[in-house]
Image 1 (cartoon, rainbow, N blue to C red):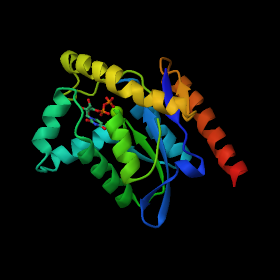
Image 2 (image 1 turned 180 degrees about the horizontal axis):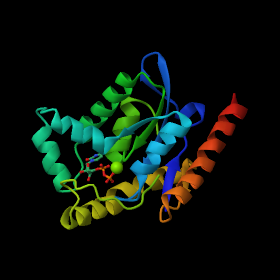
Image 3 (image 1 turned 180 degrees about the vertical axis):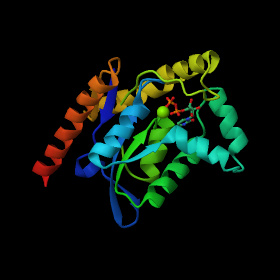
Image 4 (image 1 turned 120 degrees about the vertical axis):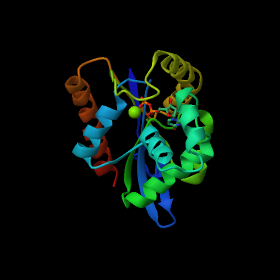
Length: 199
Ligand code: UDP
Ligand code: MG
């Protein structure tokens, strides 16, 4: 099961910078649930800028930034990088993209992430995955166990928070990529209808 949070309404829209309104959808779900794969498709089909929090952290680490070593060790432990760091990196990526429609993949991962993002940018959102083996350094049994634990304890409450506010769209992730993609397309097509009828 996976979830998508819908921010197609006015209140849920935030600002990337002082004079630009942005629409944000968070794609959340367990590790290896297929989020990245589906997010790439959504980005292509529906014109969203896909920002993967994990990819942003990996790029920051590769860039040799002063936080690189800390980011690497947190990721290897399946722990969460401090909110201040990831929120700043996401904000920078949003600003640099020049876009105003974002699909943020794998974030927020805990309540602190959510609150930090909302206070800096002023938004919400979320969804889920399939199987994946990319040979990443954190793709091993030990890290995966820790990541699943972090997901259950810290990330699920974030999904519950949005669910309570009726902002979550759930997607079954345990099917073929094509089948999941059809379900995702149906949801995103209905979002377009909602926006069209709202304005
Ligand atoms: N991570 C984090 N904060 C985020 C996103 C990712 O700290 O907002 C770290 C965390 O250690 C996580 C790792 O990056 O285990 C990999 O995350 P990614 O989203 O790439 O994993 P996926 O679920 O897509 O395989
Ligand atoms: Mg991912």
